[in-house]
Image 1 (cartoon, rainbow, N blue to C red):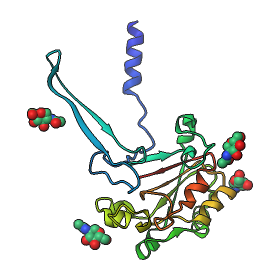
Image 2: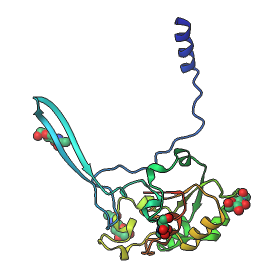
Image 3: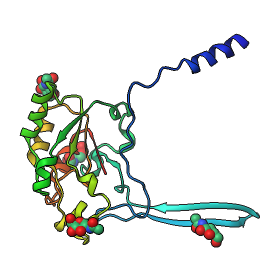
Length: 216
Ligand SMILES: *[C@@H]1O[C@H](CO)[C@@H](O)[C@H](O)[C@H]1NC(C)=O
Ligand SMILES: *[C@@H]1O[C@H](CO)[C@@H](O)[C@H](O)[C@H]1NC(C)=O
Ligand SMILES: *[C@@H]1O[C@H](CO)[C@@H](O)[C@H](O)[C@H]1NC(C)=O
Ligand SMILES: *[C@@H]1O[C@H](CO)[C@@H](O)[C@H](O)[C@H]1NC(C)=O
């Protein structure tokens, strides 16, 4: 027993450091969190704060919010009546190499711009790798506008026709689905469609296939 205990101690102290760096890319989930005008905002209610329950002091809160608030995942069931729900997606699909498609330069000039097929092919040429088996992340620099709703979404009005931010173009979404076997996509914008694309074509295309999308 003692030997076992010593051995396990030795294992702990000899633990190999993680070779991969963990990056937390999520935003704080509270009542300041930005939301699309068409979904319910975050609300926190204090339910217990004092000695209300059998004389025991307790603090307890409830919260409510749209499931599309903050850094979150869309499942195919979001846009496809026969699509997979989030709890049915195998957890192994959540870990894959990331391919970062950088459209920051053109997004600075045009907030309505979209990633094109050429942007995707450019990444493959630059890295010498295929986008197959990756999670394709769209980098637009939009995360830096997070604290300013006008800058981040394009408007403070509850109107989906007044949104402006970059995203995956319809053609790039279709090309990825038809030509590459990717595991998922992600974006630092509030929707991975372009803000100006108010019928959500990239949602319709990506979510009709069996993979995942992450977004802020
Ligand atoms: C709980 O009640 C105390 C005293 O009224 C108050 O100072 C505190 O802010 C309350 N906490 C929350 C989380 O509402
Ligand atoms: C959903 O599945 C049902 C049953 O297989 C089928 O009849 C229907 O056309 C499907 N709907 C869509 C939008 O694919
Ligand atoms: C928010 O962004 C808008 C649009 O870019 C800009 O006009 C405004 O000055 C910004 N507000 C703050 C507080 O930075
Ligand atoms: C990538 O995946 C597509 C679709 O599954 C396949 O046709 C193609 O050969 C793959 N390319 C590479 C380089 O593996």
